[in-house]
Amino acid sequence: MRFIILSVYIFISSFAQAQETNKITLKAFIVDKANQQPVENVIVFLQENNHIGKLVDSTGVFSLSFDSSFLNDTLLVSVLGYQQMLIPLKDISYTDIPFKIELSPNAIILKDFIVEGKKIEILPILKKTFDLFGTNYPNRAHMLDGYYRSLFTEGDKITKVTEADFSLQDAGYKKTAKDNVKIKLNEIRKTIDSGNIDSTAIRFFNRVSTVREAPVNPIQNIYERNYIRLFNNPSTVFGSFKNIESKKFEVLEFNDSICHISYPTLWGSTSIKIDLRDYAILEFRRFQYNQEHLMNDVEVKFQKVEGRYYPKSIKSVSPRFINRNSDDDEMEIHYIEFPNIQTDDFKKIKFKEITPRDNSLPELPYHSEFWESYPIPLPDWVKESLKNKQPLGQQFIKKSSN
Image (spheres, rainbow, N blue to C red):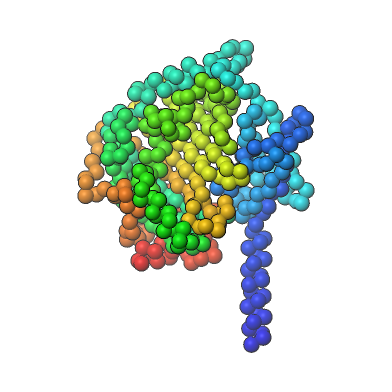
């Protein structure tokens, strides 16, 4: 009996040590390159896995822990007034001695700035961009083929994965999203949720969800809340760009074809990239932190098709508020990619095919042949995070058969 207990103990200890060996902790401090003084309110996060990050306090010192499978990622360091830095994780020394990051000051502008001796006014650029929405964005019905993935995380571990292939019909940016955006779910697969879930918090979250206007359907929710039509709504983060007369801007990039600027928000920043040839928005991104906790990170990209700009991808990262005891390590990440745009003759989605906006994603039979040949498979780092459970295919089959 003692031998069995000892064997179990050795196994558990070995497993725990193996888990720890996969964990890497980055210790660093951030200073101004000129005066070597600490820089505060810096946002640091992993570029591809941006649920891992934090807001640095006034000491400039921080630490980030992540799985070794993330070593191909890049650390992004950003704060208003300094040049943004991208540091490959492989280039960092992981010791008990903190890694020093030196930030160089950047130009801050109010209404204009100087580029190669020429004065550039930023407000007219933004105003012209807003005025050309009717020309640059689709004002008639179109069809988007979409790929959706959501990840639920605890720290650097993935506790649930959902993938879906869908078709989306949009009546045009000038119309409100509600009742004018139709979604047909073609295929879906889900793993079980192995996270630490508080049932009381779940019930509270569900009650709150039923009274808000945003759709429960996560694909529709992410699309409706983050598409370009919301620039016409001054109460949204998009619409806030229209109230720009008193904002201070930071130039991230400027040349003959691109104007990329950012401005500070409360505990975060917002950036916009404009194609100066068409005065169209190519990218929009917004970070928001509360102390050291990520509250929201949204990135929207657009692509040009037949003279109009359609959504290319939408990514949203936010805390998963379903556990009363959680800190900032439980996140939900939603990502939508639109690989195909149909603008002329397309097969309209019938009413009976629509996935209701007020319903969560339904369970559909798992078709392994469809997913095995799907052009966008799960990335290796997701597979790694799910290795300690049953094989990935079995997880999807188990879930869909319940």
